[in-house]
Length: 291
Length: 335
Image (cartoon, each protein chain N blue to C red):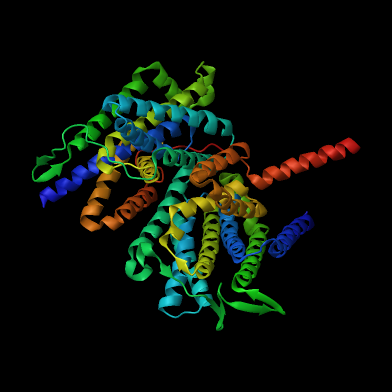
C-alpha cells in the first residue's frame, strides 16, 4: 500500500520536475515579452533527439549534450529574432499562431532529419534501479531531480546576483523604463529566449532515457508545461516549480489510483478547478488593470 | 449609416453566393466536390468561432471539443438509437449550448492566456472522454455514421439525385447542401453582428471596462456569444459526421481546435469573409503541399509563420487595405 503510493510519488516528482523546467521556460519568455511560446516543447524534443543522434554518431555523451543544448539555444535566438521580434505589434492570438507555426516548422525539420521513429536514450549512470521501502526508483530520476534543482538554484542566482539577470527582470517589469536606464531590451529579449531554450533542452535530455524521444514529443510536453505555468500563475518562478511538481504528482496519482486513460483529463480538470477559485493561478500577481 | 451596413451585408452575401454557385464550373470530379463540401462545413464552423474571437475578442483553443460533441451526439443517436438526422442535430446543438453555458460562465471571467488555457483544457477533456468511452464512441477506432436523412429522404455521397431536372450525383448534392448551409450560417452571423448584441460585443472587444461603465452586461454577452459559437460548432460537427460517414475522436482533438483558431486568425479576425478565406486556404494548403511529400510539414509551418508575421491582421483585411490604398492612389492621380 505504502510502497504503491511511494512508487507513484517517485514517478510524479520525476515527471513533475520536467514539467517545472518547461514551465520555467514559459515563465521566462512570458515575463520578458508577454508571449506564450507554444514552441517551448520543441526545445525539449531538439535536446533529446540531437543528443541521441550525436551519440549514435560516436560523439561522447557529454559533448553530445553540450552540442544539443547549444543547438537548442541557437534555435531559441533565431525564433525570437526572426519570428517574434518582427511581429511585436501583433495581437496576443496572432503571436500564439506564430509560435504554433514555428513549432510545426521545427517539428517538420526534425522529422526530415531524424525520421518518425521513437529513439531510446541510455541512462546517464547505471541501469540498476534503486529500491526504497519496496518502491523502485529509476536512477535516471535522481539525475532529473538533481539537474532540475541545480538549474532552479542557478536561475535564482542568475536573476538576483548578476547584472544581466537583473536587466531581464527590469525589462519584464517595465520595458520603457528599462530602456531609459540604458538596458538594451532587444538583447534582453533574445537572452530570455536563449535561457528558456537551454532550460527546455536540458529538461528534454535528462528525461529522454525515461520517456524515450521522437520528433513529436514536444506538443504534449509543451502543453503540460503551459498547464503547470498556469496553475502556478503565469510569470511566477516559484509558481512554475510548484505547478510543475503538483501537476506531475497529481497525474501520477490519477494514473495509479483512477485510470491511466484519464490521467491527462485529471491534469486538465485540475487547471480548471484552480482557475475557477484563483483566476490568476496559485502564485500569480494580483494586477490592477489600468484603463 | 444603417443603410450602408445593410448594403455591405447584402454585398458580402451576394458575392459569397455567386462564388459558391459558380464553383461547380471548376470542379470536375467527386474528390473536388468532397473537398469543397468539407471546406464549406468547416468554414461555417469558423464563422461561428469568429463571433467569439473576432468580435468579442475572446480566445478559444478548444472549439473542436464542441464540434466533436455534436459529431458524436449525431453519430450515437442516429446509429444506435435510430434517431433521424435533424432532431439529432438540433438536440445535440441545444445540449452543447447548455454545456458551453455551464463551462462558459466561470471560464469567461478569465483573461488573456488564462482563458486560452481554460478553453484548451475543456477541449482536451472532451477529446479524452470520447477517446476512452469505448462502449459508446468506439474509442480511438472511431464509429460509422449513417447518411443524412430528412423525412425518409436520404442524402448520401453515394446516391444520385434529381434537382429541377438536373442530374446530380451524391457528392454534387452534398456540395449544394453545404453551400446553402454556409450561406445561412453567414447570414445568421451577420444579423447577430449588426444587432444590439453585436454592438455590445464589439464594445467588449474594444474595452471591457468601458463597456461595463456604459452599462453593458459584459459577462452575459460574453457567455451568450460563447454559447452561440459552440452551437455553430456542434451543428456543423453533426453535418460533418454525416458527410464523412465515419468519425474518430480526432474531430474533437487539439489539432482541430488549433486549425479552427488558425483559420480565424489567418483569414482575418472579425471579417466574416476573411475567415471563410482562411478556412479555404488552410484546407487547400495540405493538398497543394502534398506534392512536396516529406517537406510538407516544414512548408506548412513556414507559410503559417510568415503569413502571420507579415500580415498580422490576416489575409483578407491586408488585401483589402492594399487594394484600397491603390484605388486611392489611382483616384488621387486622376484628380
